[in-house]
Length: 149
Image 1 (spheres, rainbow, N blue to C red):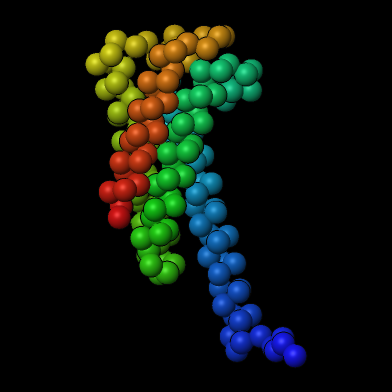
Image 2: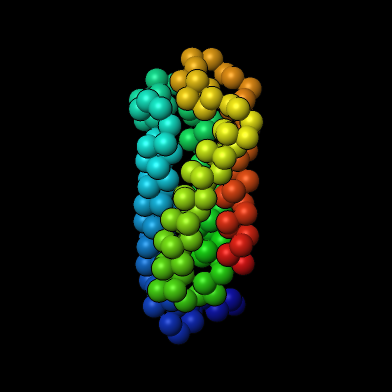
């Protein structure tokens, strides 16, 4: 007959893990929100409205920015080695550094390539140059995330 008894400390461990998940989720959500508003502040027009209106290029850039933020938060969590306080602080700091790096990199890509990001994001139809902008967000997110390791 199988032993169905739970190991000692199971409920405490489950509670602590659930608490950590909730805190990291809040930090991740907060960073993604800050990242969204940072992208919005550095692009012409109201990004939130453009996304709501279904402008494809605005949606692509926003999605790439949010995914790159998630990479940063995930690797900050992974590198914290189970130390909740350090992991939360590292996630916040590295997340903010990542947001800054993304904003700067997109502006640099805009200058180097001559892409008018405002025109691209405001366009009602898909513009291929948006892939370069999205790639810059995505790539910088990966660079920052792996630098954490």
